[in-house]
Length: 113
Length: 115
Image (cartoon, rainbow over all chains, first blue to last red; front, side, top):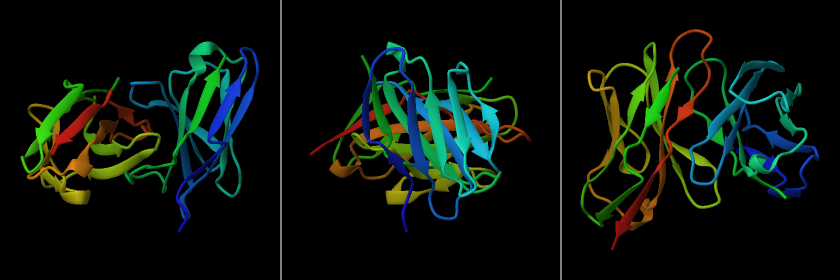
């Protein structure tokens, strides 16, 4: 039973560029959340997708956008990259709208130079 | 707004001794509370959760946590620490109210178990 998979594992981009990160949820899960984890910090909520719509958004600028596909997989897009966007980006999946725990992938390490 | 405080950046404990990792929270409604563990260069792994009911919650790998509503705390405990428990531990809270899906994490506590 595959867990949450994220690609790529590492990425290096230049300021001003755009990046797309991908996530496949755990089998049977229909909800995907994205988090940004800066070095030495806890994960910060970016947004959550359910039924292909953004259900809730954290305190992140519009440069951060996402998408959920009919097969429940998801993408995170970041435009006009800043040095401060360098972080570990975590995808988490869960089931439905209740209180089921999040299952995390191993993340994508984004470095912006 | 909801928030989590983990007052200790690092906790050191000798192998075989009991361990406690502290967590306090703030949320407007009733809380859903979670503990996660993170190993180097990995994602977070779920340990346990409090939703409702018994204040003492048992989770994976022998960990447990006690919900204290009056002190707004949810401390993680284990009776006997193992070297393999050394990792980064995160407490998280979510408001149980309708329309609230954001899970807010603390900054994490690094647990070191000394052989």
